[in-house]
Length: 456
Image (tube, rainbow, N blue to C red; front, side, top):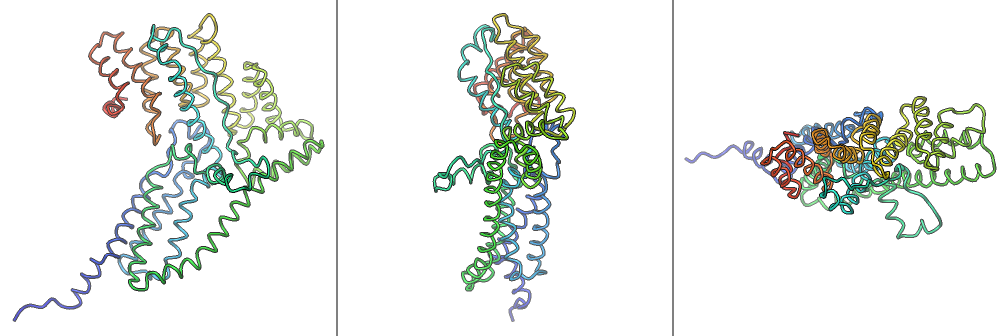
């Protein structure tokens, strides 16, 4: 007689090897990876200086971990699949709204992302304009660009009724919901794999329904879509209310109702934190505060700094911003303007008829204490050191630049190219000709950049 495999064992094997079970297992593994891998990465030195709570950046990892544990229970048959599909749909929606959370509720994170993104664009433009001058005479004829404007964290503005037309909804998607290039510059693998993991688990759950799978999908969507639409409607309404409040404050300010402007401005940033990163909002609040009692000294100093900054009186602006920052150390907008005011002074030392690279370098070093790993400052400092004949210190700055690019999803090509060129110049001056040639090759061949990552 032939041995026949017991029916219970065969059934168990078939259940474990079914398509739905394998997809569920894949989703569980992806969710586990989403709980381990970072969701959002910023240059590490800037995180504590700007008061960014690391838990904010890694909150999603805890969510991914909870769903990974729940998925494991489903795989082991310890949880009811039919009762849990809606929960995964909600989890997928929450994960997709992560850009909205960062953009609108974590203004210091959004400010850093926007700042680094704009700094990279400024450097790329400068390299394109002055590539030949930087190669000639070791960059002795170079001029530096003026710093870009300090970015705003409140970029969704209703200018007129055309905002409500269909073409303008791209602005809502990018500026309001947060799906912008500056956000994705620092997104981590954890966010992507969590989306993939939740989608895989949902797919596996619907596969397990077999013939009733389509009916199950339609039934879940009947419950999920109204709730999801309500959530998105509330979020959109919040953005619109913030803009309407902004224009109401503008009207009150024009009427001279300064106490009401101060009261409503303080209330607005409590339920819409992104407003505290908008310079127009903060300037209006500061001026209204100066005419109200009691006066907010920090806002008053900030307003004075903005006025002097607009008149190109950067030294006086620096003093005002320093006083404002001492009173409110967690104000990222004040910190950004203080860094820009000092940077402007350093750039002027380089662009003067008689260049003063040593004085410029001292100013740039000050900025790095206020705004760590500021890309434009590192780039300008590297050039200032070279102008002053300090090739070894310039090479150390180049190494800092290379290290600073690790959190970026897409490294700044022009910036890294200049950094490796700087290392090549340093090797040439130290008579390390072979090393200088290798570094120069790296400056023109991005495929070799990872070769010296450990050395950086």
